[in-house]
Image (tube, rainbow over all chains, first blue to last red; front, side):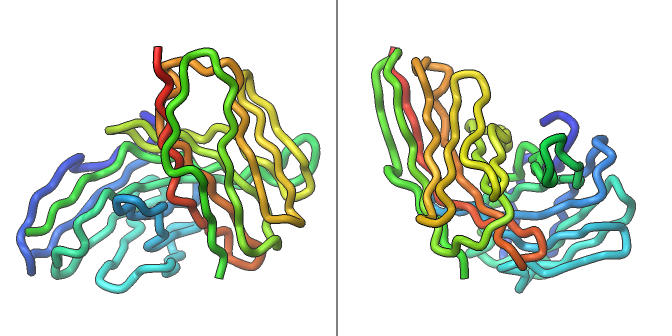
Length: 119
Length: 113
């Protein structure tokens, strides 16, 4: 979705280096998420944020940190990269909207992904 | 802990065939179930979202069903086309999980011309 952008799209780094992955969105959504995807596995949630001052750990937060600088930006940092952090990283956004038939629309919209290789 | 399984992991069909992708989950206490499509080099695209109170959702040639009590969902694709080739991911939002999605590992679909 062009409304959710991620930079860089590809990154090669070395063990022990600190790196940052950036996510920006123009959808005006308040909720943002970081996932990683490994071959043969589904996406796993790293961190999520429901507002600028809200940060929550997901299933696999160890070794990662995040920053929600503004509603439109959510950054993921690897403080000291290690080879098993080699993966495809996705950012996503959502906003709760009531549905006409009842319930809430909680569809998540994903960025194109960042492919990270840690040597 | 919620676990989501998708079978088969890969599927190849001739163009024009109707097909069904399967998704099962272990905890029936869910808010909703979502089906996504993933194309190489691109992010995930949401296809259908089924609320826990719903039995099915339809969008064009796609129909998704939900049987919450048995922990199953199916994605039916009618009259498949080569452009349908992609990986299809199922994800459930469990009750009490602070709106977190648990994903299956996906079914890689190839539609042969």
